[in-house]
Image 1 (cartoon, rainbow, N blue to C red):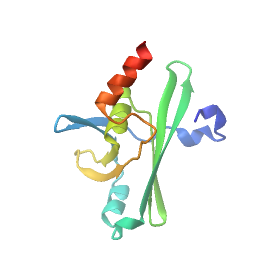
Image 2: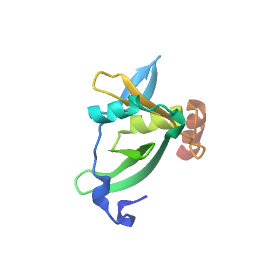
Image 3: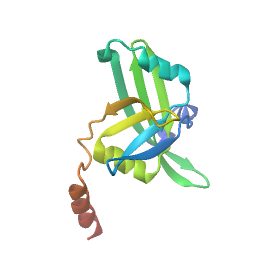
Image 4: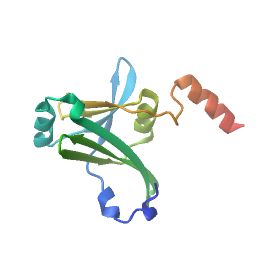
Amino acid sequence: MPLDKIEDTKEYNKTHESLILHIKNNPVGCIIEENNQNKSKYTLIEKKSDVKASIRGFLNKHEETGLLMGFKFKIQINDETLEYTVYPNDEFIDAVILNEMIFVIDNQMEQIFSCKILTDQFVKTKSELDKFQKILNK
């Protein structure tokens, strides 16, 4: 969704950094969580079924940089909602689309939370991506 269609653009100010880690030589997309209060909220969850997560992509036009793609990742834990607004690089986006996962990690690179993302509208495998790129380049 382009930001010119969003009423309150301040809601989409960047709040967190993204990072690519490699697990078994496979790139995975991570969001760095520096807030210890949020980390403790994850550990106190008893009913894992009470956790809901959503991701929403958007475009932001920056005067110097040009068009940036970002996303807002929300995690609802019981009655509390944690929000992460990130402007990731292309490698991060590719890793999330191909692996269908997002990880929230702390500064020591330890996993706090992970979420499977359904990306039915996207190409899912490297071979599919290669075929798709060949079609586009014709």
